[in-house]
Image (cartoon, rainbow, N blue to C red):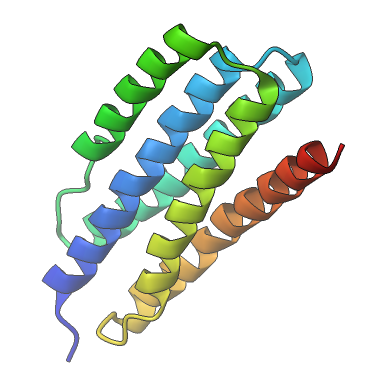
Length: 151
C-alpha cells in the first residue's frame, strides 16, 4: 500500500522547485541582452508552468493542497543575484551560466524523486511524464552554455 501523504510531499517539493525554475527563467528573460535568449527563456518558463499545473492536478487528485509558491532559498538566491548584477553587470553568458546551474540543481531534485521507491505507480507516472520537459530544458541550456564557453 502506498502512502498518499508521501506522494503529496514529493509532488509539492517538485512543484516548489519547478516554480523556482519558472521565476528563474522569467528573471533570465529580463536580464538577457539577446532577444533570441529572452524568447527562449520565456518559452521555457511557460513550459515549466504547464509542468507545475500537471503536478498540482496530481496533488489535488490525491486529496492534497498543491504548493503554489517557490522556495525561500530561491528567493534569497535571486536577491543575491540582483545585488551581484548591480555590482558587476550581467551579460548573456553569465545569465546562461546561471540558468545552467539552476537546471542542474533542478535535475538532481527530479532524479531523486524518480528513484523514490515509495511512490505510487500513478504518481511515478505523473513525475516521469513531467520530467521530460525538465530534462529537455536542462540539456538544451547545458549545450548552449558549453557552446558559448568554447567560443
